[in-house]
Image (cartoon, rainbow, N blue to C red):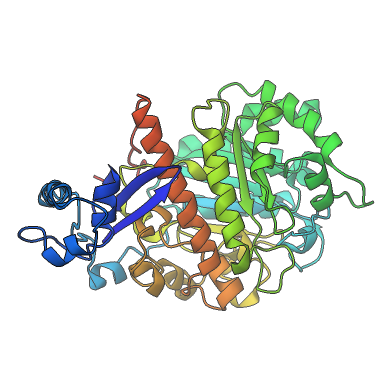
Length: 469
C-alpha cells in the first residue's frame, strides 16, 4: 500500500509496509497517485494517456525511477506482519508495567468538556487513602513479572488534592525497588491550582514527567476551565506553571491543552502557550459521544485539517516549540508490538480508582462492565484483559486498510466505545484527525531534511521487554 498526499506545498508518498517516505516532483506524484499496485514492464500507454499534462518522456522516466524504488523494497512493499494467526496470538500474559493511579476523584475546576464528570467519574467525590495506594504498588510489582521498569501516573480529578497519598506512595515504591529489581518512573498530571513552592520542589525532584493542564489563550482557557465558583483559572495557574518549568532543568514536562469545536483556531493556542515560555506542548481534540457539544464532529474536519496545516507551517524552523502530535519516527516508530497493538490498555496498562478497583484505562473508569478486579483482593479478569490484548491493527476492520496504521497503532479503544459502542470499531473522526497530523508531521520532516537538519534518532527498543531482540 502506498499513500500519496500533498501537505505544506510538498508532494509526498508513504510506503505503508516499509515505512519509506518519498518526496516527489509533480510528474512522479501524479503518476504514482494513479498506480494501484506493483509496477511491471514499461509505462502503460493508458496511464500516459490519462496524464496529458505531462510529456510522455517525463512520465516514462518517472515510471522507471518509481519502479527502481519498488525493486529496492521501498514502494508497494509487502506486509511482513500480515499473518492473522500471528496477530491473534500476540502475547496476552498481562504483565502490567504501567498504572494510572486515581488518587483523587475530586477536582477544584469544573472543565466544561471533562470526560470524568468534573472529576468524580460519576462514582462520587473521594480521595485514595495510602493503604489502597500501597496495595496498588504491591499489586503492580507482582503483576509486572520480570519487567524492571514500572510507570505510575498520579491522576484525577486533581491529584494535588491527595498530595499526602502521592508523597507516601512514591516513598513506598522507592523502598521496594532494590529488593524487587524494579525501577519506578512517576508522572503527575495537575491543573496547577494547588501548586506552591513546596509542591513544585517536590514534583521537580521526584517526578520524571509532569503534565500541566492549560488550554491556551486566556479567553479560551477561562471559558473552558473555570473554578468551582465560576472564575477563570488562567491568571492563577500560569505563573505557577512558569515557576515549575523554570526550575525543572532537563526533566520532561508537557503543557497539555484541549481544543473543542468552540475554538477550532487552536493553532493560536499552541503559539500562545509557547509565548509563555513553554516549549513542550500538546493541544488535543476534545473527546465525547456524537451529541457532545464540545467534541469534534465530522463536519468540523475541514476546519481542523486546515488548522493543522496552519500550525505545521508556523512551526517549521522553530526550535522553541515541540508539538507532541507532530513527533513522528519515520523508522516505523517503536517496537513491533507497539506498532501493532498501541497503548496496551487492559493488558500492560491499567487504572486504579480510589476504591482500589481496576479498569483497562482512565477513560473506562465508572463503566462497571469493564471493571477488571481489585487491588484489595488481587483479582484480575483475564477475559477482559484478553479482549483488549486482542485489539490490534489486524483485528480492527478499518485499520487493516488504513495507511496510517503503523504510526497510530490502531487508535483508542475508549474513543471507539464512546462513539460506536464497540472498542473494535474505529472512531473515524478521530482517525481522520490522526491521519492529518501524520501528513503534516511527515511533510515537516521532509522540509527539515531539505533545510539540512539532522534526522531524529530512531527509537530504541524498550527495556526489559522479552519480545525485543
